[in-house]
Length: 331
Image (cartoon, rainbow, N blue to C red; front, side, top):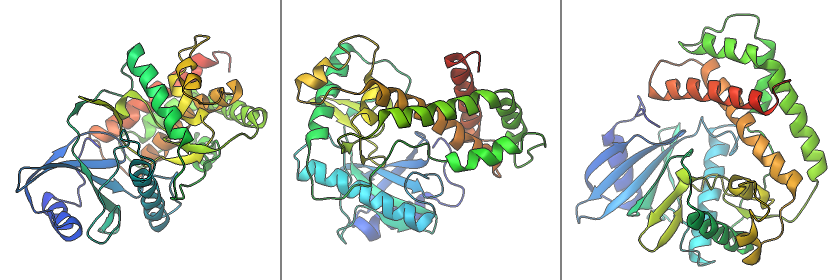
């Protein structure tokens, strides 16, 4: 998140780190990054550095329907990441550190959960940044190892889905009346109204692709292996942000690395991964922008103020609707 939470301060984070991990930070700094999770960089008194996540339990509908379920889902996801690192021996998995009580996260007020990660000295990128051919092939090999991993942790199972989809019918049905929850509500309503038929068309496409893709082998997937979740460390690539880890079809990860070439997944299959199903690739490719539409619409229909995060939500909604329209200009 680009904006610190209004109801939490640095002192709250310091207290939670001391209580949960025995970490007495000499200094902490807010890091404006990501969406749905607040980040701090913590400097311990011995000079060690750590990365701190404070997850907003109201912003992760794929993990649970309420705060309690979301906290449990987040704990299960992080426990899986720890097992992938420690049991499966996958060094590219940047997993959290267990607290003094043996848990991967701790509650912080009612709305948040805090977790502590080792600091990885590496170079990151943005979601939309490109990836070199070398990095892309390396990542495909890492995904093949991930998809072959067996761990005792029980990650959630994810069918192809659109988190937040249940809220879209109400939004589409309310387009004739003004939206007044915040400064971007009416802008969002007008833009969604302009593209309502496009959204309905793609929702129908998604359901058709889900029927055609059918079933398939389930593997441990990351869920979002895009450039924004990759760190280039001195000794290789690292994958961060494991709150989306789940048992699913391999295509849940692979669609992000499809460059459209005939040998797009050659490095993956050469490393032992199964040949991807084109219908499943298309299904997951379509789920991504539809999920963004659902989540950003929900954000801008809800009470909000203008800040860096709501400005980003408005821009992202507008850009995503334009992208969907370009995919089917006659919809």
